[in-house]
Length: 263
Ligand code: PGA
Image (cartoon, rainbow, N blue to C red; front, side, top):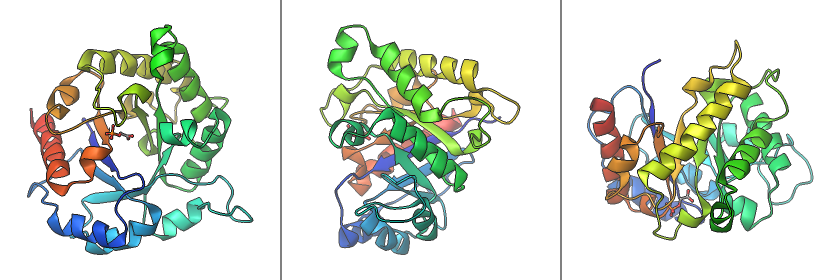
């Protein structure tokens, strides 16, 4: 399998429809995006249509949403279903972002239901995991991120819905999100190796090659540190929050992905 690099921007609760249009009017992508480079933008769901409309990349940018409900429809005020997400033109869903877990109380179990619903709907799931500073300090990093991974992927490898080509994992240490603190490339590699090892040990099966699951790093990624993070072993891309809001800096981060693939 040839190398994949995924550059993803998570806008969180920023950029309404007109800002989304402005972003895409100003975004300059490299003329040629090499095979293997995937660019993903995850706007607020209300800005998705405007972003799709303003995107002139000719399908080179994929779009996602930041959350989804596991049920197909019903009395779930404020929620989105996978069917709606698909129909609206998104291909990816972030699941278990640390803000969903820590601000909105999303549980490990719910992330598992969401991953299953997303993959069953033919969408791509980006399962986010990461430890808090306190968990890292007391030596619980491994336990926490592997527990989140196991819960997000569900109870067994027998699951028919796990397809490696539509599953991505993002390691985002909570202490590095929006703080300006970045894990060192060595920290990121160490955590990614743990995740890769667990994916290989527990999830590889005939229908699921765990070696192919991209593992992205997220947490204060910016143009100035993206190259060293992408150079780290086991880092297959980045999930960028703050620095993805500005088209110039997001464009520079995409360019770093192109360079990494061409090395
Ligand atoms: P940040 O956010 O780049 O602003 O730290 C990353 C994320 O939460 O995905």
